[in-house]
Amino acid sequence: MGQADARGSLLVLGDSLAFHGPDRPYPPHDDRLFPQVAARNLGVSVDLLARPGWTARDAWWALTKDPVAWGQYLPRAKYVLVAVGGMDALPAAVPTWLRESIGYVRSGPIRRRVRGLLAGVTPGIIQVTGGRFRQLPQQVTDHYLTRIVQGVRTWRPDVPIGVLTPAPHRSGLYPSQRPHAPAVAATYAWAQALGVAVIDIDRLDVASADANPDGLHWSWAMHEWVGLAVAEGMSAS
Image (cartoon, rainbow, N blue to C red):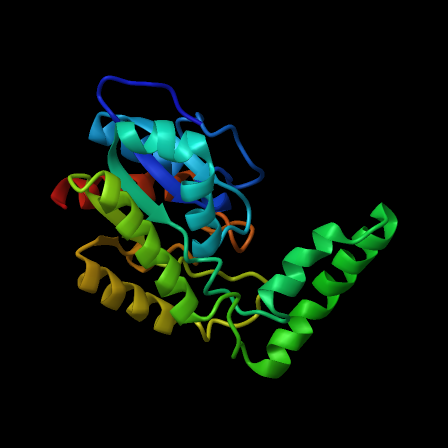
């Protein structure tokens, strides 16, 4: 999503937080979404690569396999925001490869039944395991985040890069906060090693009911706060 703009763009590699409002997904050009708020304050346009549930691995694949990403978005980027890693840090009931493979189950009714069964047992499994397992292990997340930064800097060494810390949540589907604090600390350590600006979402209290109405996604006020924080962090990088 994005239009050519002489001012340059903010390239966002994200997940559903980049386009989901307090009640449902919205078109990426909606000016209330945090990428648009950030870009408006930076004086640029937005190019967005995002899907629900994307991890750092998905973002790397998108950046390198989609010719629009590396052929159009990256060349005109004035800033790059890595807004993945939150899904990686959510507690997991089953390995990510198994969850994602459900989309290939045939037929449709069987696929929907399997997906419903997994959703039904996920909270219980996470409670039993105490949130011990993540959607992606931290070392895998760090590996793909590093590849993203290295890839961007290979082609655009002059572009400032920022990263969002994993956002806290209060979702009944993921009834554990165990992976969150270590994931935030790992983000800081990784960013410092690579010279990437950190935009700390925890400081904005996104887990409160007012900011996080469905337990995972953000209110419009929260989008505004995150967008302003991104603009400030990117400007200073």
